[in-house]
Length: 211
Image 1 (cartoon, helix red, strand yellow):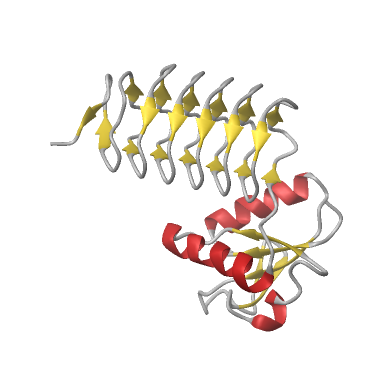
Image 2 (tube, rainbow, N blue to C red; image 1 turned 180 degrees about the vertical axis):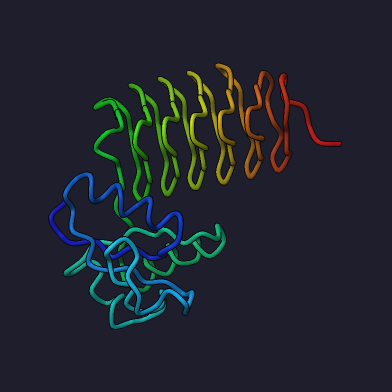
């Protein structure tokens, strides 16, 4: 990556992305953020120049700058990524921390965040725009679809399938071969030993649905 990066979103996810780019000595050109209280301020020494809808900055993407979408709200994040593809013919770059461990035999899409200490083992497959937080593990032959979020310290064991939009909470463990359905949620610290249906929410050890 040689171009500077514009980060869309200057809150928790945005500062995490900034730390990742800094770890790789990638220049962050600026933040764009919709919270007006942050605009024209600096966040971790990087200027918040305008809103995420400012065309004067967005038109730099794909020509002079790369982009990473770190908008906090999941629906807004999806919408912004769709806009970038359709209006600006641009896709977000990956943000992979220098101190993560991603196998050369893993497959990654684009727009993913992989934080410090995270591990993605050989033959794992990560889709697009996933968030893999600090010290999480995605083991060999596990597969994450698009827009999956894996909390800090969570373990996705081998041959697990996590479908689009699912959320795996901090410290959760998903045992080998389990399928997590689309937009399902796994609570922090849960141990998942059986498939989780789409849109279901499970907690506990062993994980069970909320009644």
